[in-house]
Image (cartoon, rainbow, N blue to C red; front, side):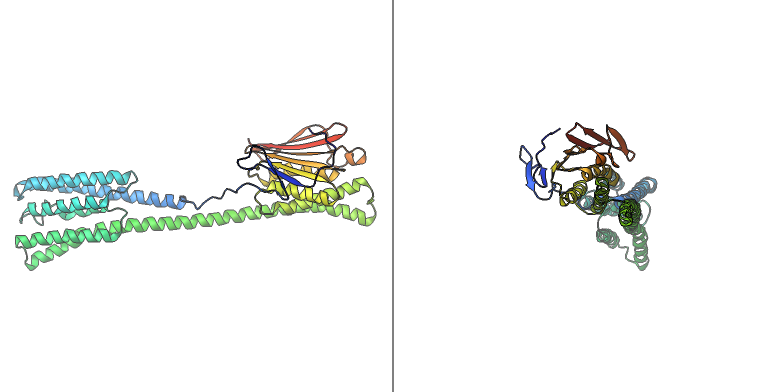
Length: 419
């Protein structure tokens, strides 16, 4: 603890300079380091809801494609084996499509999109081979599994891509079927009508699932985003109302003390020349000034509030030196009050000179005031204490208050440590 009784220079602030070994002295107002500015949130509840909805649709699409391929396509191929024009080609196509669909399903269920272009090319090649190998008698039969199964595999392979890709590949699938009909000579009106019905019936439901999944995920994300924004606005309103009520109650408390002193002065019950009355006036003014500074939007609220108290003391003729080392972490209002109020009370009692020091780190903040000791009635006024005392600020922050005298110097310190 310093015992230098020389009157120090006016207010100055000490802060670390990047790349320097020692702190640098900066005259004038305190300059904090760069404020941490959070960028726009890339993720959030709305995105989580959209992912959850999309994952459910992915599972449904994969289940439909694989179950249809194994439970409908495979028994039909085996049942009509002898009637197929090239059963080995149909079976090889079925196996190839199953491998492509399984790989795409694995990618989808693990949160990645499959490579659409190469897999879709393989499926179209399989489609053409199966139509050619099915034969005229099985062209519209269940053994020609490409009619119904291929569209579901296209849904899985093209997941997350624009709907026009799906439409384009289904058109290609229809053209392959039409070319097979023409090649087999099945161009009668009944055959063409049947072809049209097959194209519509086997494409409409996969397209609806493909489009509906994207629409539902988008709506879920939008609704979740709206709900999150609404809750955020309500939370801000609640916080603002609580802060307003807290400031009103504190203003009533601080203003009541000031009104009481002014009323006593007006009624003649208090003597303006009395040092104790003077101290009460200074203390009330300091608390009002700190309460006003508490609402300012500044990078370092604690230092701003302490500087407000120091400025008031300096305007009352007290030479004061303010030294700040480090940048305090974000602190709740209640913790800042418990750090600053004892120092503001001590400043109201200080005479001659004062030195106010703020030493801050990520997990600890210490605020100290050194001033000449005061004896007599001023020392016995409200707020004068002796010996250490510890108070708790909130449920998980602790503020320690120490007060010492050695006959010449009075030292007051408040200290906060992260739990």
